[in-house]
Image (cartoon, rainbow, N blue to C red; front, side, top):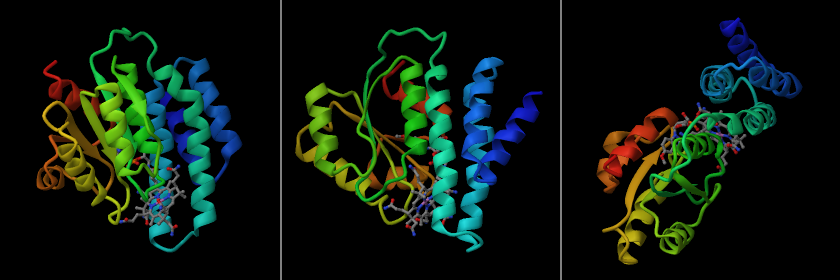
Length: 214
Ligand code: B1M
């Protein structure tokens, strides 16, 4: 049954079937299936298949957008269930966003949801976030962590810009920086002077806890 629903979620995204993806996400909640597994191994797998097809030139942007819409509408249903049963005490303040010039926000939103679910106070700046907005928000809320996501090789360079701007604003001593996203790696994080890199949403929780000394 569980494998079946994962397969059906995958198929709904691969077949650009927004309605089925939404209906299946409601079913995930109804039957008490793990929402994170549904996101990562069902919908996420489907979206990766679509990404590969797009890269291979087999499909065009409008189709990619419909598949992404299926993921987004499903996330709206599944995300609220991620935090169920977790304690609400705040482990720290995290300002998170996708860097400037980059509109990919699905992975970043999952990371934000997982951190919220695990007790962090998260300020999600959305996508295409100007460098100054990261700095201003970190200052305003006295953030412990700034998290940046990038999905494009052309925008990942913005991460270094934000780190430099945090330094210039005198915040770097108090604020740790974590980066992630498909083209980003541990080596890249080190190169630009970030404190940490996380490969996926689950890893990000442990990494951020470690950065906070928890
Ligand atoms: Co775009 N896109 N896209 N896209 N898109 C990619 C990234 C691409 C690899 C597709 C491809 O060619 N195979 C390619 C980038 C190539 C490159 O730079 N090397 C690409 C391109 C080229 C583009 C456009 C330029 C296309 C165009 O216009 N010609 C354009 C970009 C516009 C812009 O940003 N300025 C574009 C647009 C779009 C859509 C709007 C259609 C849509 C985004 C919708 C949205 O996000 N609201 C879209 C999508 C859906 C994708 C793919 C198919 C899927 C991305 C995704 O959501 N994955 C993607 C192909 C791929 O990644 N294989 C692709 C699922 C998500 C759960 O995974 O985001 O990796 P991910 O997040 C993971 C981890 O990376 C990690 O945890 C997450 C959860 O486990 N993680 C973090 C992410 N952020 C983190 C932060 C952390 C820690 C971990 O700490 C802070």
